[in-house]
Amino acid sequence: MSTEASETLDVKGQNCPMPVIKTKGAFEDLPAGETLEVVSTDSGSMSDIGGWAESTDGAELIAQEEATEGGEDVYKHYVRKAE
Image (cartoon, rainbow, N blue to C red; front, side):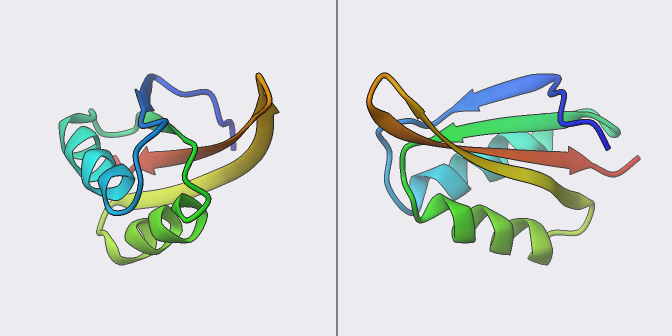
């Protein structure tokens, strides 16, 4: 499955629980069948967003990535909304 996102949510610099709260809000507005990319600097978002997607009807966590950008650890999450 492709991780190409139709929308990106930037929550860099925000710590728990804000990445999950903002992901939930953006996901609610996401059209069915689309993928949301969430970009965070909070390492806890790896488990937090994964747990949120698992417990949310219609949310499918299709990928998570960890990278370094500009000397900063960045965590990317791709959540698809069911059609």
